[in-house]
Length: 105
Image 1 (cartoon, rainbow, N blue to C red):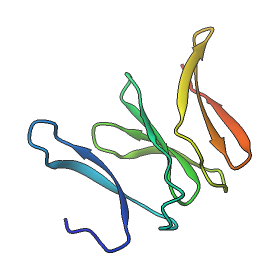
Image 2: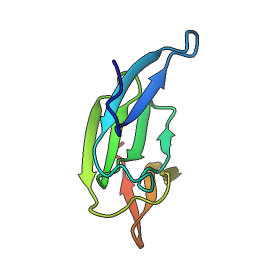
Image 3: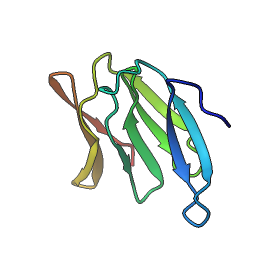
């Protein structure tokens, strides 16, 4: 699909063909300052902050949103993940705060 002027997309590429496998338009300001990186996990999840201030978990196979949480602030960093006592956590910097989410087992 053709790109709309000033739009941002999260895209997955087919590594063999270089063609777009799927894409998700990102909502929010188009100022270039509000796009942090994306984290992919071995379990097939993608975590990212969108430009409108939502923290999103998506399925890596098709980019479909599994859940999203409004954080109402600029997401400044790419998320990280770690495990403590068998519980996996995802952490990121949001505004002047550090936010951590525990994932269900």
